[in-house]
Amino acid sequence: MLSARPHVHDSVGDKTPAAKIMEKTAFVFAGGGSLGAIEVGMLRELVSWGLVPEMVVGASAGAINGAYFACNPHVEGTAKLETLWRSITRAEVLPWSWRSMLGMIAGNRGHLVESLGLKRLLSRHFGESRVEDAALPLHVVATDMHTGAEVVLSSGNIVSAVLASAAIPGVFPPVEMDGRKLIDGGVANNTPVSTAVRLGATRIIVLPAGFACAERRPPRGAMEHAFNALSLLVARQLVHDLERWRDHAHIAVVPPLCPLDISPYDYTRCGELIDRAAEATVAWLRADGLSSRRVPGALEPHSHDAEHPACSADIGVPSSGTPHAHHGHDHSTPHGGVH
Image 1 (cartoon, rainbow, N blue to C red):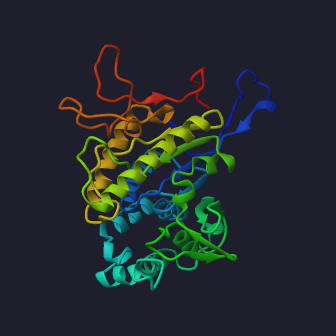
Image 2: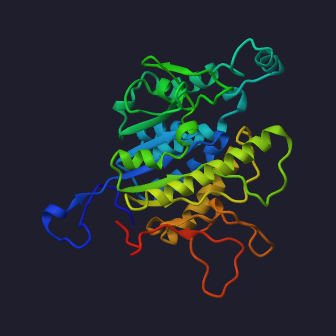
Image 3: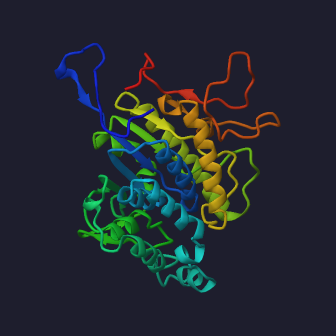
């Protein structure tokens, strides 16, 4: 089991004291709207397993979860975060109406709703807390609206930082910080694995919010079509990042739920998502998922059939000769070593 504290390990092929380096673990929380509830189920079981990272990195909805956990990195804190997600409503976060939609269409403003509801929700839990004062080092990812560049917020007011990271373009207004207008961190880096590597992480545990499954059913309506397209883009980018950074850190991805037929704007089923994610995460942990470098099957093109209707507990490579409808692949180094 992964140690809850940083520990010293040897570099390959060199056992001298000078070759010993300190391992630094990061939890990386991805964006995903209401599907951020999935991360809460994952987090609950990771913490119950005894895992506490040395840093937390989050983008968009993942910034909300990451910030709350960084300030409350214990079982009691994750229980309170779970209570928050089980009681949240769309009206609190996205209070849109026909009037607000018409106002945006008419060109009166560049966003659908104000972020006052989300700001009130965050202020109730964070008050005037600052990013740099969190119990665990916290890094919130946002995007510069004018350049598209990733902006990592490692200090400043937590509410402002999280509001900026969750400012979905066209839905919420941008947030101005230090003279820059910032929008949703998911635009620049929805699953900020690369950010964690640059910040010095040697072991990364990724908590993904979830992705559309090609086999669930054809998308209905403009919103679902848009979500499906964005979901495929995010999944491909994550796979690319896992391949790109595999030699810089040991990266373990908690398997996302699949199939997943819930909109990222539907807050009525958060409890269900938490429960499903917790169950799948326990199975993954018991199968030594933390030591794996496999890309979960849900991130790859795949299909489902009657024998294999889901890949939520994608915890191991199918045994030789056993047919399977989808396959994750290993992104380990040639030696398959684990830091």
